[in-house]
Image 1: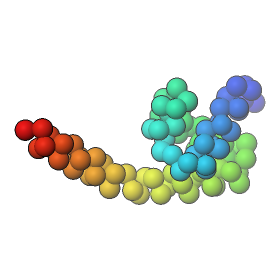
Image 2 (image 1 turned 180 degrees about the vertical axis):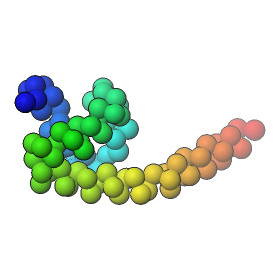
Image 3 (image 1 turned 60 degrees about the horizontal axis):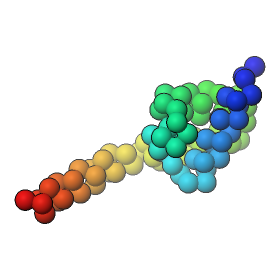
Image 4 (image 1 turned 90 degrees about the vertical axis):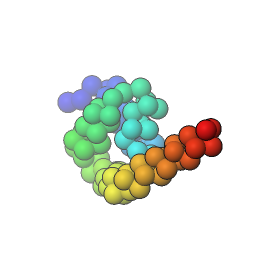
Amino acid sequence: MLREYIEDRVYEIAAYIVETGSTVRACAGKFGVSKSTVHKDMTERLPALNPCLAEQVREILDVNKAERHIRGGLATKAKYELLEEMS
């Protein structure tokens, strides 16, 4: 059985992901926990508590994972454009 504060955190993070489409990294920062904790909460604890909500979260996290290389490329591009403007 999960401690109440862990169960509350799992539901809070899951609701945040569903509402915002947020990434694991962004959730970790917002809730003050590690990425590993968010990942474990969403992939192991949530399915045991609420399989339906877990499926919604899984779909969002799968999209984020598929798009992360694109976001990384855009961030790198923006970084170098900014550096070029400064020089």
